[in-house]
Image (cartoon, rainbow, N blue to C red; front, side):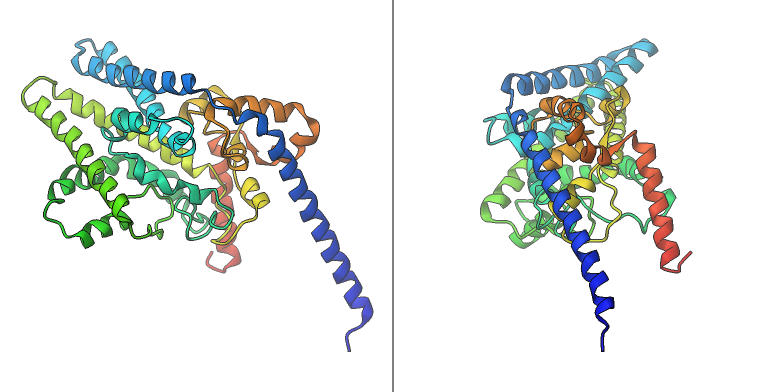
Length: 365
């Protein structure tokens, strides 16, 4: 027969755990409420930023292609990389603000989505990465446990993928769309489900498309292909110099690499697939301490990722203000500081360390 003395401590521990969870949940909800004033969007800021990125990014790329002086070519390439990368990351903002900013989705597609083979529809399922019932599960396209990966894979995997990505995208968005008139609907639906989503979770499969979604895919992909074939025509006819293609490839690879490393440090990815509470989702997310370097490789305030997950309605230009507000409040800051990281090196080191610990515990080390 079970001794009452054995039961009481267990119940006591459960009560203490329940109390801690309740306090944590209350603190997260309080922090979220404190962020409400920062959800107001500035359409002028969005439009000016997007158009300026397009003007400076594409303009610098063309300048670098025609430049004779090596210094001018290098400077143009650097500017093109910075502003084309920044402009391309607006795809994340489109998903969150398109209902509040009419026409912005189309403008992004014309300026960045179609030319770089990043049409908005491939990111439409980003909302699954924020919903409590799907975040951190196999239904989340942007979450995948990384503790089973080797240190080499974690460190160099994004760089290798970035070099190969333009080739894959040329096949997917430059050549395959030319076959759409003769491809059966079932094949196009398969492409939509398996090769038409920005993912971090390689096992993710997109739901079967509706007729409207399939039409959006077909026309978006045809426009992506059109941009590529027009660029090839301009190169063949000599209107654009051959160096334009090489510089474009280089800027795209560097931008893609930075974006992949940024995504790698968004969360700690230490937990296996499973449902996360709102508190767990927040604490699994990272915010990088504001520094010039962190702002450069994680543009549009993507470095404030824990705040973004707590309140996805906050536009990018308000996140630094929200961060400063929370840091000034000692009570709110206590929980928030648990998500602060100095930079990518700290996060990647923690990820590699937790992977080694997992390997050791499972007896594979």
